[in-house]
Length: 102
Image (cartoon, rainbow, N blue to C red; front, side):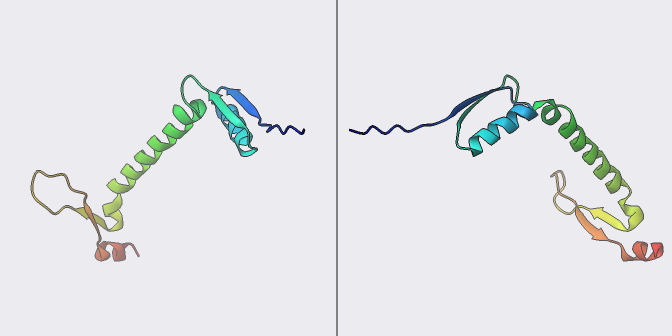
């Protein structure tokens, strides 16, 4: 009589920071059953509080500056619709203003 056993790998990763996150992904890709233990949130401080949120705030500030300077480039914003309702502004190009810059 021959007995067949199915062998599976189980991996526990302590800490879901950049290293732990990558280790868990690699183990899962290799077919292991993975348990990731993290107290705060997966990704570490770079993803949760430092780099990614900072870049998002910087991108928002850059967009706000670009919008505030858009009329200098001939881009105009206008809103249409009933009063009192928030609207997404329409965007138009003022070709006369653009041509002045050429």
